[in-house]
Amino acid sequence: MAGSGVASIGECMLELSGQTGPDWRMGFAGDTFNMLWALHALSRDRPATYVSAFGDDPFSQRQIAFLAENGIGIGSSPVISGARPGLYAITLTGAERSFTYWRADAAARQLASDPAALSKSLENQALVYFSGITLAILDNAARKTLLTVVSKARAAGSLVAFDPNYRPRLWTRREEAQAATVDALAVTDIALPTFPDEQMLFGDATPQATVDRLGQLVGEVVVKNGEQPALIAEKGTVHEVPAIHVAAPVDTTGAGDSFNGAYLAARLAGHNPAESALRAHRVAAAVVQVRGALAPFETLRAAFDNQPAN
Image (spheres, rainbow, N blue to C red):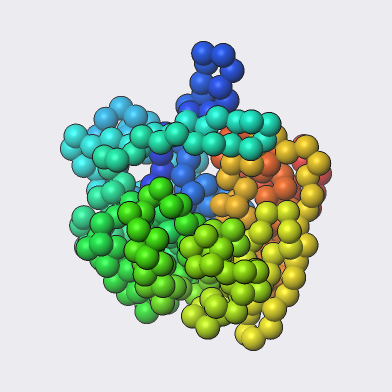
């Protein structure tokens, strides 16, 4: 039987942001970590585990310490001698971001190198989460290992959530990404795609087409589409939940990941899909009004509970 914890699998990178002149601010971020940050903030009593692989350099040590300082463990994730984290820098034009990456030899690419350790990290979790980026940083054999371990966790009672999060630059061929995504969906209970990604990857003409395609594979589907309504398919019914317009966003980094975290927090708390999506939209709207991928816990909680922030 699954326990009460939540585990997210992927790559937490060094983030350089807030560039003003020659000065940059360093933080830690990555799609699956951004999601867990929000989920952890909104599920205060649930143990949170970030499952990856880490180096033994000072930056990796600080990364692990940062997680611990915020109540997030690393389970049995391997610490690999001589390895180091990936790095990316955010540049902004208005609120829109672009990224430059240095990640080819990142430690996280070895997150499935020890199947027994990976399996141990996923034991007794209420929820296991991963993304298309998790798949993309692994070679084919490691992807198969990951999906085998996730499937075992699911069979043991864990709910599995997956965001396809297609990033063409991380894949050698579109067809490879398609095949890996379909394999991941086969072990998924809740799919959290973004429509423009699905349009690029599978050629879906509309969000409804994404719902129709994924609804044949997964029991619960939530299609995000920026400031357009989210479409939710569950138990044969489709709901449309309007997004929240933000007139002057500051930084859109992490908005979709935070939506996912809030949606899953709400579902784990017993809210229905439509109410969960409404709360997730509120959280995403709050996140785009702060700089960086990780909004303060208080900001996330106030938006989730629809209360004025202090």
